[in-house]
Every structure is written in structure tokens, then in C-alpha cells.
Length: 154
Image (cartoon, rainbow, N blue to C red; front, side, top):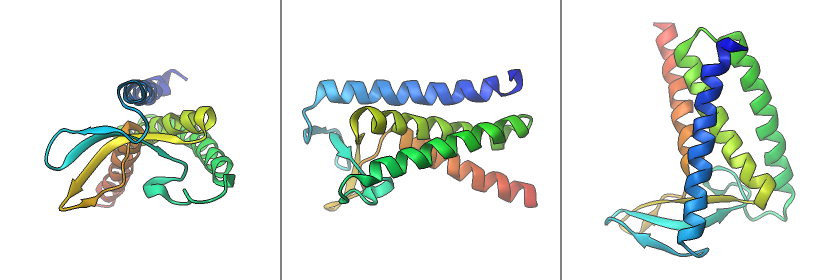
């Protein structure tokens, strides 16, 4: 277990940063509210009942349990992979970020039935879907997994 402790601590850091940032947003802004910080970035208080980019958000509620199941299964698989590959730093860093992000959003889904999003980037009236620290960690982790796989092939 000691060999994966550092990787799990990275996941825990992501979870703590994600939950603290969401707690701050809920306290700072009413649902639907926010503030423009630059000409391309707002902090907002949004809820997402779907997955990435609000996938399945318009469904009747079954998707909550679907995403809870996927996040739980993925988390167990990631812990298994961390144990098996604990000496592969890039791979484990990537998995740690994905795990922390998945668990950060899972906490919201179990506790609230939705995920709190607050980072809103836009350009010329087009808004990228709002996201959060957990989503960022998942995205960076996924990019690192791709880079690691490309590095291993060369």
C-alpha cells in the first residue's frame, strides 16, 4: 500500500481543492449568479445533472445513478491500476488526477444529485460548458495518459 500512497495523496489533494472551491462558489454566488472577471472568463454558480459538457443532463434522473455507477467502477479500476503500476510515475500521476476528479464529482452526485460547475470561458458570445476543478483534473489526467502512451511507443 505504501507504494501507492503518494498517488492516492495526489487524488486526495484534487478532491479537497475541488470540494473547497465548490463550497466557496456556493457561498459566494446564488445559483445562476456569477461575476465577469475578464473579457473571456466568468465565475458562475451552475449545476450539471449530466456528465461532461452536460451529456444526458436533460434526462429524467436515471443518469445520476448511471454516473455514480460509472465513477465508482472507474475508481476501483484506477486503484487497481495504481497498485499494479505504482512505479510508472507519468501513468500513475495521470490516473491520480483522473481518480481525484472522478471522486470529487461523485461526492457532488451522491450528496446533491448534480455537480457544481463554476469556471465559464467564452468568446464572441460562445460559451464553453462551465466546468470545475474535478473536470480540470480529469482532463489533464486524460491528456497525460495520451502523452504517456505516445512516449512509451517511441
